[in-house]
Length: 198
Length: 309
Ligand code: HEM
View 1: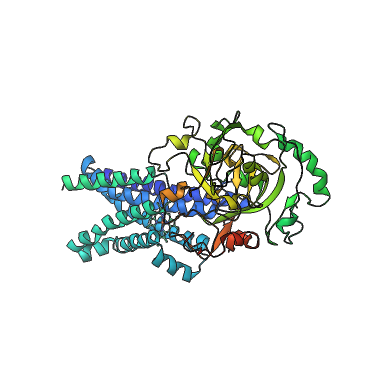
View 2 (view 1 turned 45 degrees about the vertical axis):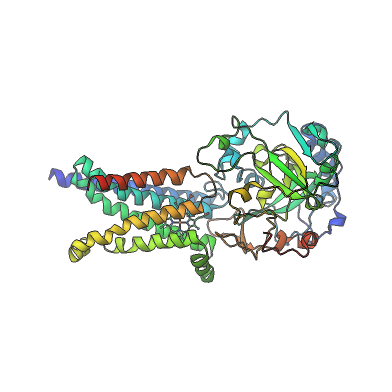
């Protein structure tokens, strides 16, 4: 019972934490509607695209960090949180794409095709999103059972997903590389940790 | 309000408000002088190339959404941190192919020049734009004081380097090699649309907009319009500009606004006119030379603008 309660509590807390950025964004958008340019600035569309992109990446890294944390803490409950972090990362990435489609392209589909083909930072963003899609789809227990040992293999896609998301960020950064360096070092650290503690 | 007459006014008719420049806050004086004229119908405003739907970007947006990497890479960093920069006293070092070189006090250089209001579209290379009422002086009136020699074909400008007051210059993992440097061909710099802005919205330039003076070359992407200038160098060779050094295939020397030549990472065919809103990205087509083609296209006759981007 004790453990069940712990699971429920930690899941609820985690759920709240992962929803916070989105709730904050919705709140900022509500302020924007009341008083334009006061919450998200002169170019709210750009602010929204960036905000969603950053949190997609952060939660993806969080999901990736959970197995090592679980090993260190010897707490099985932590492992249960991995799926939620990953799904949230995917949701933020989808919203990121939707915001970009609306604010940057106004749903001009030719422009999207052009971006996918011509703009390499967008191409790698798309590749990252494509890598994430099967992870999200197969995240349920049913799929875990059905795929058995292959499930682990499918979920190796998280490596390219993060790598491409980082390349995406690196290529879109004009200057001020501290952010992308920080995330990349963290990712490499986790990869190293997994490799050592195999 | 200011833009009552959307009609095109040829550059030959650009009128000027005469204002005596009296050290700092000269713009207040100019505003007093100018107020009568505004009432009488915009005599002081240059509106070359304004489109019927160009309405002024609100002052708070113009002064709070800026790219000024000396203070950080975020759009909100300059307004937050630029007050740390001390602009008084301000000197400019003039060097190179000119008869009058040396150090000059900012006030002495602008003293006695006509300050005009110019309402210009401002197009950033990042595909956003504003419409801004600058107060400035013709760039050529500034440059000619230094008597450039005939060997001078280009002019180079440098921004202040003062890491103690400019936190972006202290940041790690930033790759601009300070000072921020820009340049123009001399005939571009002498074009009547090119100004040195001293103010915006009738007030002295706020630090985040490039106090005490910054270029405003409205037919080029914003990064050409270098801020807080401390160096003017006349040269026979094309100078290298900071963004070109950093990413030569993305940013050229000319950087004329051109919807037909996309940036490798995004299209330049359209722009978001700020402020945009959560309901409306406020996108509009980008115009060749930012809508000033009639005035400036002649400067580039015979040049392949896809090659000299
Ligand atoms: C089809 C997929 C995607 C498209 C079209 C896309 C598009 C964009 C665009 C247009 C920007 C803004 C670039 C700029 O303003 O210079 C951006 C920024 C960003 N994107 Fe994506 N993206 C995609 C997928 C992803 C994914 C999967 C992630 C992470 C998991 C991600 C993370 C980011 C990050 C971190 C930023 C930078 C935000 C900032 O600097 O504040 N993107 N993306």
